[in-house]
Image (cartoon, rainbow, N blue to C red):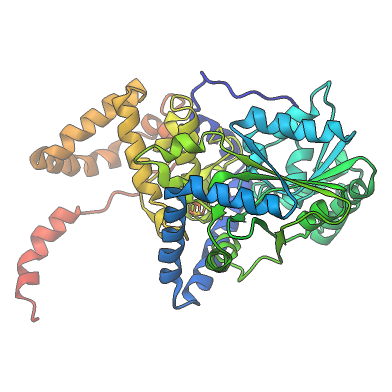
Length: 474
Ligand code: SF4
């Protein structure tokens, strides 16, 4: 599948989410599954008395590293080189992809077994390598990523890439693509079938291995990869060539710092105390090669953005997605239109193309839950608010929304007008014929039910009870 990112088409989040909302069973499952992860995360976080201290520490370490990033990149590269790793730098996605291809083609490699990496998705590497005349077979070895690859879809979540699919969907997909029983949706059967399908690629000649990177430790020149399936270990340890793609923001100063992040990552992501595998890759095995590619791809530009550089602290745990009521009910597959979905995607994607991603700012209720659960204290909802200001200044707000916001501004600025509107609204809503709200022209009514208007407004209640509240004994 070949894909290029259009610079001109504006992502209409509401419209794109409409396709997801056509399947009520999937929407309900998606919401339930992600809320379950959020609940488990809470149990884990509350089980550690020093959780908030860890968040402060993690945030401080990230901000310190990003403030001295050039030095830490140099230290990491020097240490890795001393360990026998070949270090490369890629300014953008194109350079990254060309480097991977060069490394492989120079060694006659024709296949790449890889573990999960958002960065390679961001670079559209699979499409690049797959294209003729390059013709490299890229095999995703993470279960969720493989499901998405077989379905020709991007990941819909940064930790659980196929979370929008039901088990029956996976059974049908595997039946269609790798010849399993399409009626058997047993999880063990499906996982085992995927393994049997991908494992032979590890053993083939002319296969290279690729991993992503969760943390790159400057002090030791080590790359740390956290997985639950062990597929990264196979990708790194079986083929004779191991390539690691590293976003430059993944660098942390010391091994001691690593403990802070490792304690938080899996707890925040899946509500489990730790990932099954926390693997440290430092030097090539005898007779093999290890290459690290440090990738910028817009990160330096983001680092220079006064209000938005905080998003570089992100450790890709997905907790902000799991807690977001908009993401849970609108899906991430194509609704956000970019590699990153959910609240953090709404902040990262516009740094690449403001116009294309300008509507994502409104895919938020601004409840601040994303910020509250973020283990590294990215001020996510504040950045979303700031993006709203930026796109308004750049006149990127659609005309209808502009006019509605102006009206809302006038209404909220006048207490008299506001109270009069609220008072008349209660009665009007009761009498409003259904077709006014639920008709093809009113997109608000699609997928939404208007709640019953309360018998009295808060102001009415307060006026009635204010005097008795004042007299209440202290
Ligand atoms: S912004 Fe925070 S909560 Fe969201 S994915 Fe990144 S680290 Fe996790």
